[in-house]
Image 1 (cartoon, rainbow, N blue to C red):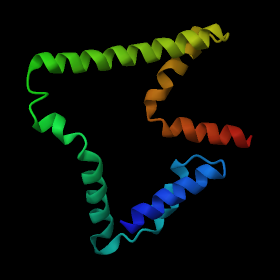
Image 2: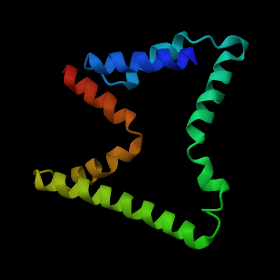
Image 3: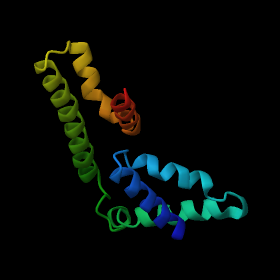
Amino acid sequence: MLTLLIALASAFLTQAIGIHAIFGGFPIGLICPHEGGFAIKMTETIEDLFAAPFLPLTNSGLLDNRTVWGYVIGIIAIAFTAKVIGGAVASRFCGMLWRESVTIGVFPFLGGEDYRALQFVLQLA
């Protein structure tokens, strides 16, 4: 638990100095001991911590029929489409070509961290 708190503190400090928080956790992950099963135990603890809020959805019977799954998939599809179209149209209004605009619309779905790293590098230039 101490390692998780140190990683969160490191992320906070990197955000405070103007570098994205994701870069703060990397050094802690590198210095975290991997022998003796410590890293595996840490990963299992974090998985349990983040899986707990979503467990009631799957085990309580809320997602047990096709109609509800249809709604879930429909909402995700609408959100995806709206995000891509919104980004593409906004980029097009800013004067970009359609190809570039669609790229801007799809780009946030590529993981996000690549985008943040690109922003960081562009700030340095």
